[in-house]
Image 1 (tube, rainbow, N blue to C red):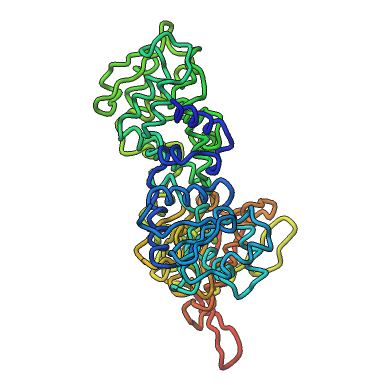
Image 2 (cartoon, rainbow, N blue to C red):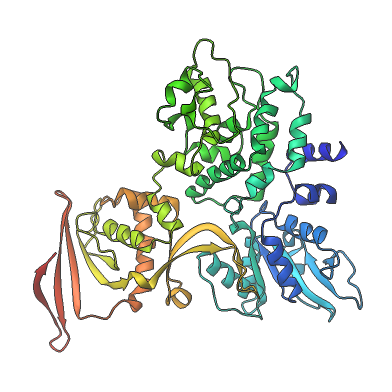
Length: 536
């Protein structure tokens, strides 16, 4: 009961790793993959920088490794507060560099004795950038270069003189099934059981009855997969966000009222936490259509075979004496969202969220991305190429409200030279097989990635703009910003474009939204441009 009470207080607090006991840390820790990456790097004698923003789980990661690997790793010695041993091997650990005075931060790698086998530093990205600017040839500067490349999906050549980078802020816990693991923790289930409730007994408690559904691995995985939709917003999910979510679904709401707001499946969508707020912006379970089952849901026919629930699962019934009103209908459909038999939670959302380009990212479908980019740049007026990316740049004077009607081609890039990459949560690791990813996706040029930083971010917002089509109005700021980023990407690719003596020029008629492309031969020996007499 002491551990449960500490856990309850943790869920109701700011949720910092420093504020919890070792016993609670062990009870709530789940395998993420970051632990092994950190342990393997330290065992190899490599320095490690764990980067990320506040609440990302940097300190918790170090504490978890110290708890789980005694005897496997040299002793962790906290710097600068603990006395470092004179002869026994040890690892110097800075659990929160932000809390150290700026003068001392510069010395975290310095004056280490020969028995210090490695240094592990947890640091927010801001202070890390400051150290890199102050010491341009330091380990911090090398770390920032590796970190920023990894955040753009670019893996730089291995550098044993530089630290291993663990980007906790860029790590994607949802993609790595962490939500499902947290919801399955024994301590979480125990807290649900003892949560103060006005229900007369367990059989009538909606909070406890709903939680029984999470005993199913399939249901927990659907809950995890649903939150993957949050990644479509292009926002990082911190471990603090995960625990705020767990706190809300465990402790939030009430069993009283009709509908009861304590059931976890209701709080997934309508809870008071950051992840639920982001989810509400994208998905509304009331708008999901279940063919043939809608009438049975509305009239409370809970046993109908038309519902096609997961095996061994039964609906939690709600008072429907006078049929369901809109709010109770929403409650039932929130439940069915996780219980109905389907390939995945995102499959259920296919009619609410345009997943075409998201699917292209998941399946490494470069052709679909190239086709979409080509169509976007030509305002959808010309049949887009699929096997070549055309590098268009505006040609003409931009008016106050409209973009130029002309564009010139900087060349073309074979689609085969482009790859889809995810941001990297682990970089410069001694084991090249250590692959942990973030939630951000990029279109990357195979050869120009390292020296030209040739990568283009394919965030959910960008995908939505690309699918919607290009705007010719300069006042449409999102499109203006997107074109600036596309312009940088195209410029970085220009040197790698296919060499040719042909120049393509496109003209768009914004009134009729039609376009034409004229091709010209560059006659270098005559220093002039000659029409080729063909237009597409």
